[in-house]
Image 1: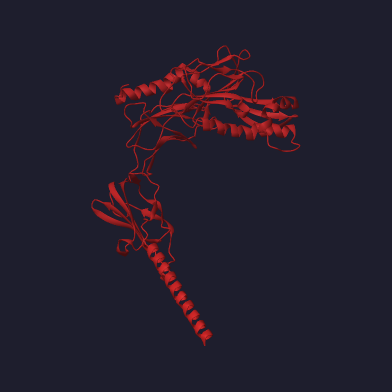
Image 2: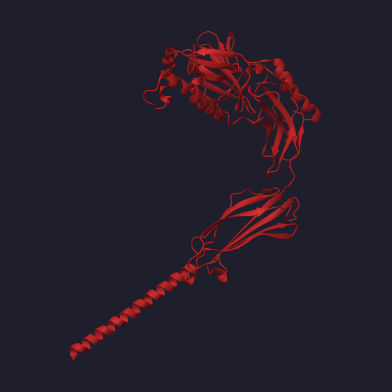
Length: 469
């Protein structure tokens, strides 16, 4: 009997412990559930816009919402204009599963705004985005994230007034457009066929007046369309024709013989730049340098010319290398022959000037050095910014005497001539670029061309618009 009674007591104690443990576990689960449901972290809005936000004729705004704890409950988007609320979106995010534990934690949506369809006029408005989660906080209403931002409804495209009605453009040459915008536009400029050249304000006291240097490629002809373009902050765009008289130019054609001796002479300088291709022939190596590397070098030059000072830094005609003779002209079309057969064609986008070996190379005009270093086929190179997207480039140098960021005056020595890169003999390869496009340097050496195409235009607009200074 004693053993039976003992077993009964032990069983009772085990049962009591089980009940106690279950109670504690239930209490812990209840506390965890209530704590989870009562969490106080507000939901998150990912809203990558600046204030004020500009809205054009029709726009879709991407919006990402998230709440990793309680989950999303409701998204409500309202636009208030002239005291009137227009609901742009009202989305409910339901829960599912046992006790509603399955919930939506993140969602990406797009808010469409069409002012005309909604009967909204241009002007300021207030955009409000309210987002709740499934927390039991705030008497079961959940945590709230409330974002309000000023918006500007603008459905009218900007007006562009061309201030230079008489214009002449040489094939392969440069030009200058001066125009006035009816409103501030983050993007405006000149489009020449497929090439776009941004315009800049700041030259005149009236910030609405912009100037844009541009270029016409040597490959573009008389039918090339030149237009002024502008796009405002709301995305409205305008285009207006820029009238001009076209002057066709004839460019020289050359046939260049490429020998094994020449290729072997230049290869050491390009050894590190050649692809790892076993048993590549001399011809293949030359073609890689003359094609792929040439294109990569061009992209490197364009990157160096990506930023420009918002001012005209230069003055008067650009300086030509003193006591030099021309060896190759701008846009010379070169056919390369190897073992008597044509293997490639390229255009020479600069002027080659030869003087005494290792002659000092002066800056063609005032500016800021934006690049110094080795650029493949161009060898040791210096690029100078002259402001408003105009650059000069000096290549095949044997020595560089300046550093990037250095301000240089006209005639300041940048380095010395040489034969680095893809060069035959000591000379200077001199180029002028307008942003991404090489243009004929001869124009910039000519004081009459500068007077007629730049100075007189700028002075005429200053005089007619009353722009002092």
